[in-house]
Image (tube, rainbow, N blue to C red; front, side, top):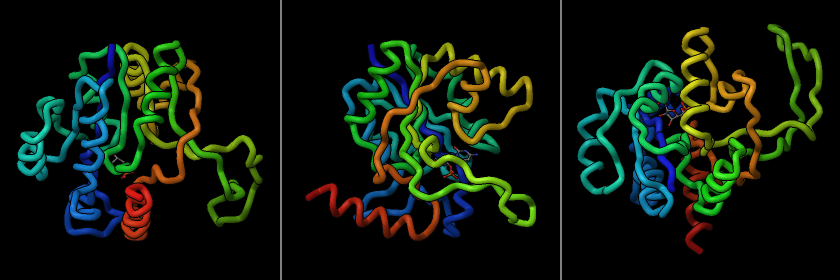
Length: 225
Ligand code: C5P
């Protein structure tokens, strides 16, 4: 038994202020998207990769697809990440599914293995790192309303790993109730199903703003050492 991975890649990357999808930006000569795909193409437990793409990127990603063996026919993305994943979910064949943002090119196989093992043992799981800063809730004028207990706060990353059955039901429920979440676990949580956190890594960043490109270069330099 292995797993399917859904890779949402259909964002526009507004916060990067780049002229096209940020996933085509190169880090040390290879695009963010290729780096992410390589991680799963080379992971022995990964059986298939389903990518949700923008209409304007189909041609380029189709060309890329020819260099890989695990990528299934491309799926059209949607207005929000959640829509992109919902489209992709209808195409997966495995009973275990991971969702991993195309914009996170530095996740390592060891952490994917831990997520996989957790689902095999019956526990849905996501990667996360402990909050380092103090987190506060504010009102509309940015006046602080309360301070959260940092010890119980995690920043959540991807991959996020579930059984296909649970993730599909969570997405069906979310769409029928009009719930929009910023990650997959939040939808599964809403179905009343427990999701565990597996310790992620500070290097598993999501390339979002221009500074992340510089951080990414730095991470790569240290990874190859
Ligand atoms: O914009 P952000 O980096 O938070 O998006 C997370 C991931 O979701 C990215 O890999 C992006 O390409 C993807 N996405 C998508 N469809 C959307 C919006 C974002 O596949 N409509």
